[in-house]
Length: 378
Image (cartoon, rainbow, N blue to C red; front, side, top):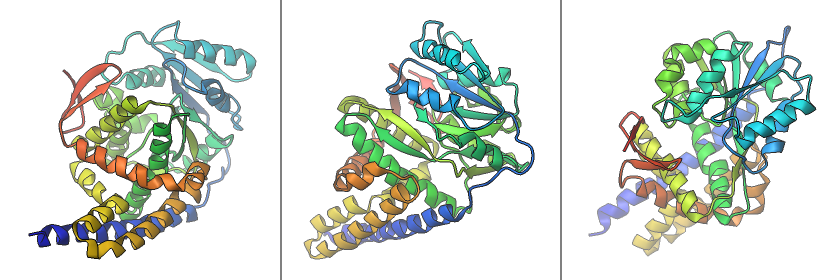
């Protein structure tokens, strides 16, 4: 009676091994891409920073943008209210860096379900430059971030560039697991998609750059405002409009904070349900990104196949190293490698849970995620 389930599960295990090998090849392909250098004029840039409260380490995060090693850029900050503590902090830092052009915007309550998009629309309309660098408040940037992006945008048909990020957790155990998952499983999938599709046709927040014209051709911020994953849709729509979309060679830090268990599970479910609704085929394919859990399941179903755990563990470790360590320079995964199986188990459980329902909790409100990944208030 278990023959057919065993065969099916064995096929998934074999597929997960193939995925790990592809992730290794994809990571090495990305590393072979040279870091670009500016040739000739340095284009002016506009950096857009949506703010909402005080994230952990916000001051240091913002300082890394004030201290960019690039001569010609402006910083734009937006928050819902004048009293927002993040906006207050940004104003104080602007006084410390008087040579950096800065502007501040109070948007009021957002007109869209996606409040970040509302802030980005406000700042985009006011931005003085064609090339926009959009970074969430929890991003910490290397000094050469803007220089690298400017060099990449020397290509006249480049419309959108996503910056890979190294997730850095807060103090909680759950945020540490999530960071390990982002730095191994998530980015392994992104790099693999880049290899298999011979490029990327999507973008991934929380740090990206785009031309104003590419945003307009993608439907503008108003058209993107109903989506939870507006970054993905921006890249997808820009690619459909004929723009080139890339993974930048600039790697940033994503300070994900310190969530307790419940908050972390809500976040994971929101992410998974959004992905499942907007990209159902790709979401189903995520099953192959869990070599350890599916190998354990196979061994539990058919103990004689326990040996499948050995290649699963070896290939998972190899792929994790090539992505997290060799590309993202992630010391967390290098020090806490023994947590990878726990993260993988939690990840596949939330992957399964995301099939049970189409609603998410976000910023204290409930939304239905429709088949296009759009948010519908409940």
